[in-house]
Length: 167
Length: 417
View 1: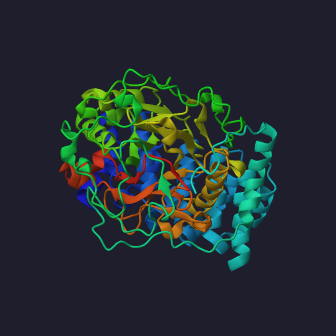
View 2 (view 1 turned 90 degrees about the vertical axis):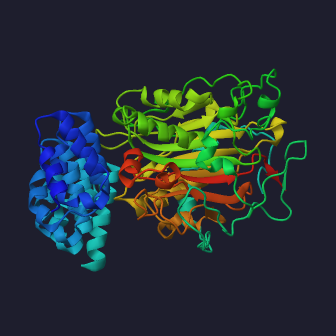
View 3 (view 1 turned 180 degrees about the vertical axis):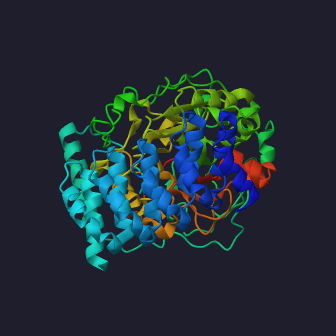
């Protein structure tokens, strides 16, 4: 990891809000080069400072798939109390596709939980991205496919369809 | 075929609703011959000016501009693009003309406020007042300004025979960006180059960001104004769309501003629309058109671009007297990822064969319209490279945005067959 990137990641945990905001902004301008900071950026979604959160989100939107070694930590963050953190953890896991197969249980729990709807939807989407390797979540997805929420139901149905096609 | 029907027909709300509800179904049945819509211009693709050799022309040989008296003619496709698009044009423009349309040439004349009393309530699919969705009433826009007196030289300098439309994703456009004067200065200079700028990614808790920015744009005597949509997004992080426009050159129908309906919740941030009209003289010759501003979710691009195809068709049919729809924004998709958009008959897009992000790696942004209906397209488009245009380092350009603005030029006069 480049020295600058390591510094930026460290600065995201600074006690000084301006330092955190500057680090998040710098990462937000790095596009896929910021991928190694994926976990730190997801954690920054909890930050009390608006600037930190907004730039962390901008970075997360653009960084593409996270590195493989981030999957285990992102899996833990799916159930974070902060919905924004859970949402982005699920999103990044989905971007890993089959590489996030180890996160299927956590994602399935999120879909089936009383969590924030956006988190449940993104978790269903992520299971669809994982594909046949997420077949253990079939029951949860079938239940979600019958959900009253149209978007959740559609995403769950899409995930199931993807399993049928390739599984 | 622009503006086949100028006779206004007020449609009943029930028929409009049913029209909208049927569109998704209809669109699912729409076939298509496929669209070659763009050619790869073997030209410089990044720079302040890019002239395309797209097959989309400014109209068939039978199409004629209904241009104003005085012998002004639309710029012909293939010509060079105005020097006013160069950075130097940001200086007070010695080449300023008397202005565009009646307001500039006849400042004592107060044009009617367009659209306010129109019997044609826009038959546009609008976002329902569903739980968690901002109602249309939450869309805010300031009162339209009075017709401006002749703009001072610094406010003009644009070509009199081309309407310049731009899409610009200003990454995290909020208070922290406004706190950087050097960034605001570049953003203001970008806006002054164009007649309408469709902006994505306004992210601020405060409502003062866009008004404060427009003040900066107008600091040189320009007379820009704006309309802005509601905060949209599925998480606590929301974004707004805004159109910033030059009141000396265009006006907006304030009754036309809204947010598209989002059946099935397929669009993370359903697009904002507004109907504009150039300030042409006589007003009957003005080019009128819908602008539809979009920022797709990068993780659900295939679904979103397909949903946008429905929005596009719905907008085409929203008013019997308006067939020009310009969909523009950050699609997070290159033309080969346009899905059902690319299957809309006669669809075309301005930007092709180039990258639109500041790092010059991706093609995300575009300007989409019907080649048949919007014959006003002049065949000119470009990607305004922030680095080369303003002499910035990559790091400094990225402080402005991670996207370069993209633009296209249209005739300011309605083209009728």
